[in-house]
Image (cartoon, rainbow, N blue to C red; front, side, top):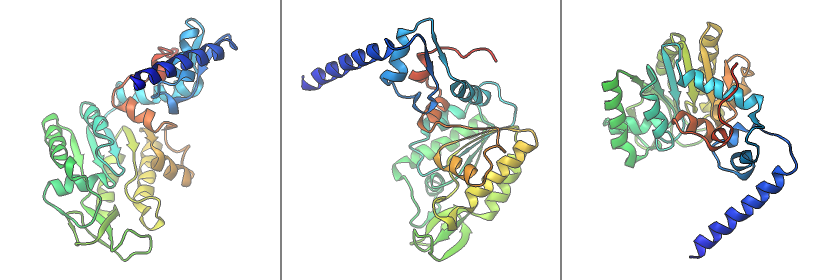
Length: 288
């Protein structure tokens, strides 16, 4: 009962705040893609007060157009590069892209869950044991749908989770006991370069290794180079997610890819096929 009362009170205060905010304006423009996945009073609710005088800002329009270029009718082959720490945070994205992508490159710590599920030795590398059945299911579904999934063949392993640790390159399914997989290896990078350069549409979200440690940033920085080269050759590339964007920015390559998204969670939810509250509140974008 207390929770219900609290929720009702919050809704009422939101309504009052939104009404007051709306009273100061003649029209409403939402240009905050980064919060489009949240039903905030100032983004999703306020638009209701401007039924005929609401629109997206230029950034929101650009974000939606870039994402729709990937999700709508992309030029093929379409390659999705998905990295980061956990499969659990990208399950819905992987499943939605399964019906769209031609190739899927799985990089970063996400890959270790797949490798362990297939019987590989991953040492002390990050792994979501409870997601291993799902990882095998993803591989099975991909094979059925004709989507090629590429896991790293090799890895830069380290004796400790530390920038100054001893390192060695080894097959990703033969990481020594007690060692950690920290970055994508050279064989995998060379293979991925070929796939990326032969793609017409590229979506990249998530790093290829422990990017925040300089000793293990090479894989992610190499991906920046590959995606930039493909873009230079005429491919459309969309980059999103904190570490991927940081890598592109760090190298001064933000203008060498087609579009760098400002959305983290918003981009992921859009890629999952969800309708975002901040976008639903406005409706369709203007014709380009």
